[in-house]
Length: 363
Length: 277
Image (cartoon, each protein chain N blue to C red):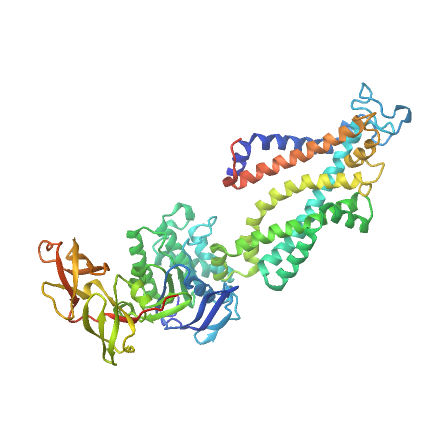
């Protein structure tokens, strides 16, 4: 069986170029033993290329990949002992479930009795013993995925790579499989990399998330920190829903920054990031970090209430600032939704820690 | 099985198959089908018109044209089949090596292939036959070698595409060594395309053999070859048109047959290309 403590994976300053296009730029990640790290980002951000570098399918232009501290750059894919589960599962269509799981063991010349024993064991792990003689086309999407996972695990990989493995599943099944993968990862103490563009999936499955954009890692942190303390404006906008308000810094210290918003408010945003006086900034506030007031104040800005939609225990407000910037605000629903139309004053909740970023210079 | 069912529904492909089978049967049963010795000359009967003794007439040397066309099918088929095997073997090895290995080998192989493909096809075949000398064997070699660059390019393209597929990636990640990946996952998927190409190549091979023989660089007299027959009939085209026309029609029918089968196979093996017939 797979070692209980897993293996470490170090990606050091990996760069990969396709001709003149840089797909991955100076990416460094240290994945701890037994940890699931999600590579999260929009299409074309380089996450799949990075996965293919780790798998050995492409040789990076620069940098190195180490497993348990040993470089594997010189090893072809078949000698890296890395398990991979693809989006399409990539099962061999002419082989039965059992044969698919046995494939990697047979390719490594494992003795027949041991192959049979391991296949039986993993069929049990993924609860597919009854379907061992079925062909992939006779299985549902979830069952096919479990075969793909069992096939990847059967060879006792040092690292498990998951390339958007849930995207072909419907919503209900997707959640079940996310739990299943997490269960197996915990059971075998696997070190795993999950490539996804689905932030919910990354947040629910991963121990840490590397948010990628244009080939670079913008933030590598726990799901909670990535959500609560986005490191960049991109992460702030990509993870969850956020409201962006332009303004300028009036004064800044390592404790916080006094900001004047274009929407008409002057407020202090806590945080150790400093800005030159007069620098254009963007305030990034989550919908649940805002609140509505009936009375004006210096740290509040006037908004037009356009719509209030009850959403389970919450009410979602659709607001517009005087410049026409649309804001979303979420507050606990107390009884029936409050009156939607009319003016109000919007401000930050006392405990809110919104992000404050330099305004990107126009291209 | 699905491919065969699709092939059967294609009427033109079935006509092509019938023509190819006719060619194969003719070549196989030539000694029994031919009414006369294809090389026996009778100068007093030269350019005899079609009649009771010579159903399709006689040529410049009084040889039975029908018998020579029947025996000529053997040369056409022999040159076609063997040259296809040469082209496929060479192209498969070079294309697979270039596509699967990549790097400098790919660059070198493909640059050479591009240079060869840039030659007018007849010029290339002429150059090869000029080096090897005329005759059935050398004509076959020339036609086969002529086909290698195109097969190489086709195989290399397929291998490159297959190499990037997820199931090949899965096999590699699971520990399968490169030869096993090639044998079990890449080559079986290259073969359907090769079968189609081989059929279409047969038609071209028959044409090229005829062209080389027509120019006097291919099969040498007195062996019956359709191209040679057209060549000898060319001089008497106005006074005895049947001498060149009959073997010309044989070439056309054989080429048409293989082309129809090739198109049918392509449609059957890749249903996305199927057109209504």
